[in-house]
Image (cartoon, rainbow, N blue to C red; front, side):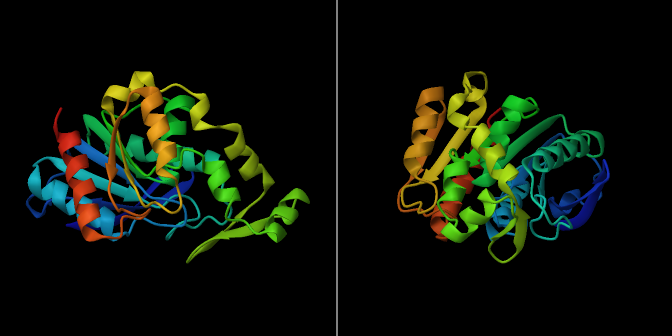
Length: 255
């Protein structure tokens, strides 16, 4: 069962979706809640998120899944993207899962840009997560985004102007956003303290985020790494997504 709602905290309204088993629709608290975060230009309504939520909650009783739109994504009302507000959203969603859903254990399943933000969150804010699964995380987020900008947009940024980025929905960013990304390089930090409770999955045919980035990061921090042969960045092949979903669910459930 899906329930759409807003998390209204700290002056923000975070567009969210709760996925639970139909048998739990009268339940107001859950011991285990997985927070799912999406990639840049995506939103909480992806087929992969829904498949993951339905599969997890149908297989294991007492689990719930929350997905939400990052600032400026999906149905979110904001227009200009900042990393600070992204991290604030994640904090507010974590607080909601603990205070409103009564979660004893909070998990994190993040993809691409969401993976970068989660890794940054661990260093700058702390680790509230029992386990973390990252699918094709954007280890070098700054370089990844800059590589897709036109020379015209790069010139506008240098002049202090805003540009519009995104896919189906456009959002405004300025030079400070890119400077912020550049100033936090995931590879400059150690993640050994989190490694035992972290899993990374990456497709061998990822055309946006090189699998070599994830593999090097995982090896440097002794994190379990699973390559998925033939999978592209969004794991569009249903068999690839099913494999990733299975691996992540078993990782989360195996406390």
